[in-house]
Length: 507
Image (cartoon, rainbow, N blue to C red):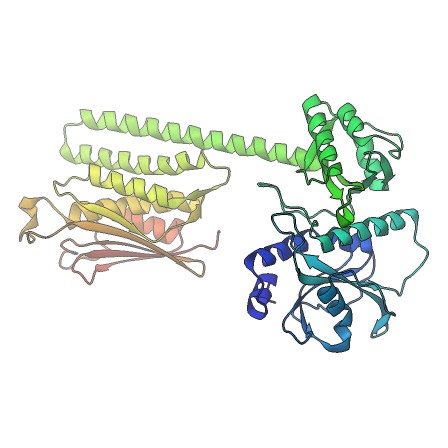
């Protein structure tokens, strides 16, 4: 199924700002659907002949749907959409007409024009229409709660037609839509509660207010309830801002060990401030889990930090031991161990600064490559270059892969560009030694190559049987820990190419 943006781009001439506004509507309109006890369908015109395309749909959670089948992508015209045409052309809410039938389901049609308010506050032209279609098969006398929902829904519908609903989203604010399952509190223009739903009463009871909310000054109540006076003042100021017609960010109230999330929405149908709608939700358990996760994350980061420190200590001890060893072979072996331990420490250093058990691997590769050119036992200056991106990798994969790349890069520098007395035939004056690390992802497979433009593999080289300890480590890690394959071959340019193919099923 195509997305709202795909459908709008393909079938309409709507501007990007218009489409963004339609996205904001689709992000917040579950509240309007639930309060209306009706399906909402977002229609956009696709021609001058009165044809409309449905680009989004939401069903109510408070009532049966009027449509058993999804309407998104449907193009229709003629008498069936006369109500949409009236709302679109005349810019007013359409509520006339007799019920219509969808199979054996009777439904009532309404049409709400959608405007995007201009930056200067002037009313803009209609860009779309929201169809509000109510299933009448279970019609009955509404309760007080339902009457308050319907009254508030009509106010929000008028604001939708005015271009003042939904309000703009604040930077960094979550995109979770308000729900009628949240506690609902309606305020008059003076900030006093005229209605509170049972869920709202329960939420306020959790933070210490057990009396009936109706008649209370909500701003004063928020100041009294909050454990932190500043927090209570922020929540009260948010309500005052909504009463002034503004759209403040969400606020939390912590009291008596409980946490209540509040969102204040202005009610300004036809541009007249008549009060505010405050949605409240008990998020005590959510915040408790958040704190537990933060504590766990901090503990994991501290563990990685200590592992990094321990590995650096091991590397330092090996380095000291290497300086005291007289045998060149033993000293070289210890120095190689220092580099291997240091490469693993790089991964844990990165993890100690991350909130997840994943790492941005490109930076690690660049640091390992830089270190390889500095410590390699060759007098040749070799340029390291990376192509493509490794992206984000899980910690267990990154630890093994960094050791593999460390060994391959060191082998490329030391054996691909040996010292002058070992090199035999000298390269031309314009020769520039280079090692290129390439990475490419395709369908959960990571392809990595390490290519140098050096002398290539020696005659008769057998990667399976021969090779140094470093290559043996590489083969063991690639085929074992990484569950991948490795191939060493002479590259097209005459140098050596190591090709790795690694599955990323753990991502």
